Image 1: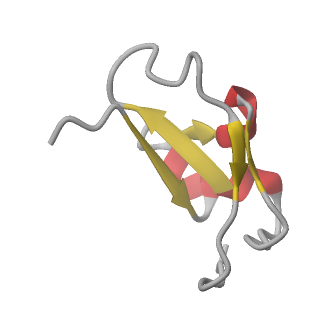
Image 2 (image 1 turned 120 degrees about the vertical axis):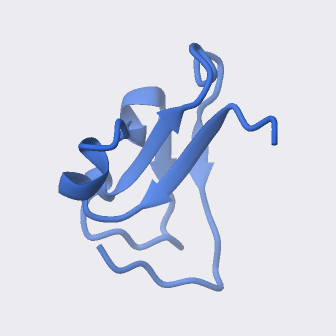
Length: 68
């Protein structure tokens, strides 16, 4: 499908074992509308090496509640 990276919310213990890393390590943070219980619940995984090298920002959305 051509995707370079994936971002998910969830239990870090589950996603780390699948190769995901805390998104804040890449400069991608959850905004106020996301309402995560902890920053490490927002995780990313590069599908292509270096895909997140020049990506950073704030994830925001209002029609969703997180359950971490």
